Length: 364
Image: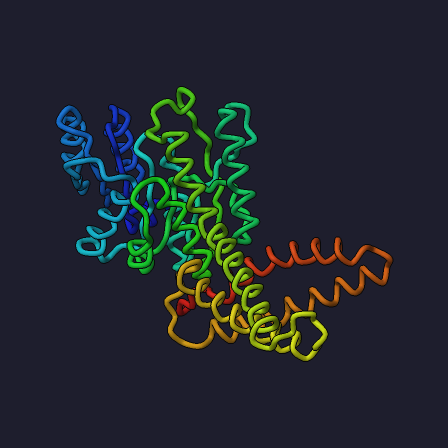
C-alpha cells in the first residue's frame, strides 16, 4: 500500500546550499518507494555543484537550477511548472525540506492521503509542546497560529511547515499564488482559506537537529515578510475603513451644513437626508476599496456586492440591537456602542474575508 502510494506521488525539494544530508535523504526516499523526485538548486553556487550532481545521478531524480538565489517561493513554482509539463501521470505533489527534517515515514503518510483524491492541502504538523523544540520556534509558531485563527477562521498547529501535499489538479492554483520567498507558503494558506480548499493537519515527527542551525530562515527579515502577509489584508481593511469614515463625516457635514444650510441642526429631515446620502456614498466607496485593494476579488459578477449589502445591513441591525439591549440593562450607551462596534468590526472583517469576497472555486 505505502509503496504504491509513493510511486504515484512526486517529492519536490527546494534546496539552498545543502550538505551531505541531501543526497542521503534522497536515497532514503528512493528506498521508501518514491519513484519521482524533483530538487531545485536555488542558486547555491559552484561550491555545491558536487552535491547536486550526486543527487542528479540518482534514478528518476531531476535537479533544476537557478543561477542566482530567487527564494523558496520561486523555487517551488519552478518545480510546479516542471511537474505540470513532464509528470502528468502522478496523483499529487509532496513538498519537503532539504535538511532531512521530514522523515520518509511521514512523506509516505502524506502520499497515502493523496490516494483519496480529495481536494485539500495536507499540512505536516509538528508538536511544538515537546521539550526539544527551541523556545523561539515554539512561541513563534503558536503566536502565528493564533493570529491566523483570528483573521482567517482556522487554527493550524503548524503554519510554517514545509511538508505539504496536494493533488496534481491544484498545481495551477498553487503556481498562481503570489510570493517569492518564505512568505509564499503563508500566502498559500491564505489563498486556500479564501478558496475554501480544506487544510488538513497531519501529525508528523518533530525533528530539530542542532537547534535548527542549518535553516536559511532569517528570524527578523523572514518573520517580517510572513507577518506582513498575515496582517496585510487587515491593515488595508483598517485603512479603507478610516478613509471611508472620513468621507462619511465630511460628506455629511457638507450636505447638512452647506448644501441644506442646516447650520444649527434644527432641521431634522436634513440631518436624516445628509446622513443617509453620506452613508450610501461611503459604503459604495468602501465596497470598491475592499473588493479591489483589500481582498483582491476578481469576480466581475454582482455576488460580492449583494453579500456586502446583506452583511452591511446585518451589522447595522446587530449594532443597534445590542447597543439598545445593554442600555436597557443600565450600561452607559456610549461605552456600549464603542465595545459593540469594535467587536462587530472584527466580525465584519471575517465575513468579508471568508464570505463576501471569497473566491468561488468550483468543487470537484
